[in-house]
Length: 165
Image (tube, rainbow, N blue to C red; front, side):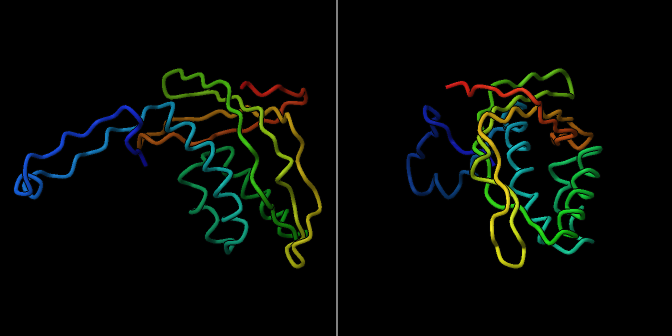
């Protein structure tokens, strides 16, 4: 999941023979902060995939990015949403302004713009709801035994926030 960032350099081989004899460079592991940001964003991408999957497949779709208690909360929420004939549409615009890492735990704060996301009728696709700008989300993440960061809890605070530019 990592790629060269601007400013990174990869030494050029001196000949074609050197190119074939040189193993491909191993990308450096991502920092904890990068992994936390990726896990948080991925929850929003995999949620809709799990909604459209068969109930028995949803846990496997969410498990790489969510852990308990959020995993159970999402599974129950998806079941309730689907029972109403609804799905989610769109994605919020993230304005993550703080990531506080303490050992194997982290707290992320996001002032997202959720106006281009909401719920829709699954049958007709008609958009029924939409989110709001300045939605203050706080996510707790855990680095699990496999070394992967997963979102454990998400809370929407009642007070609005201001995105940091």
